[in-house]
Image 1 (cartoon, rainbow, N blue to C red):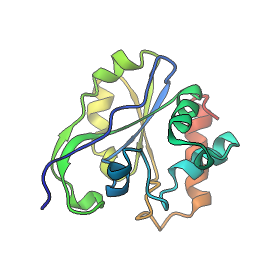
Image 2 (image 1 turned 120 degrees about the horizontal axis):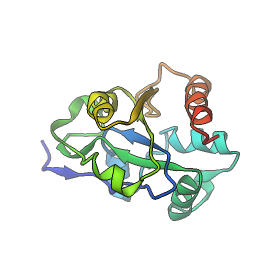
Image 3 (image 1 turned 60 degrees about the vertical axis):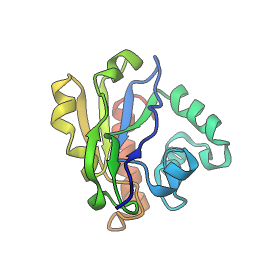
Image 4 (image 1 turned 90 degrees about the vertical axis):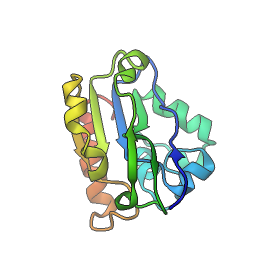
Length: 165
């Protein structure tokens, strides 16, 4: 088992109305210091399709500017954990992020969308803080049972309902 891993800082600001919460960054994401850095993760292609722009062609800081401009935030459920590899099933000794801090960081935030099942395990905690909570199909390459088109349709429904698409 590796040493304790620490996640990435939240991407959110005063414009953020919806935050997508993953579980914990993959090995590729931690190595790059970027959310959803694994080339087969469908997060950036889904946002690109929703917003009609090729986010993957942009440098990472510009991607984040587009995310914020559209009212979206990105963060993870876990602040730190121990894990071999990138699978959620390998997460051990997980420490939750400070979700109350989201209120200060993003005062317009009203909904949290969980990117996959592991993230959704924290739904009750976020609901208790007054956030509308939703579960989205995971964009991870490990979620091969959902086609890109099916994932996109589910994400589109949530984004349209919250004024982000």
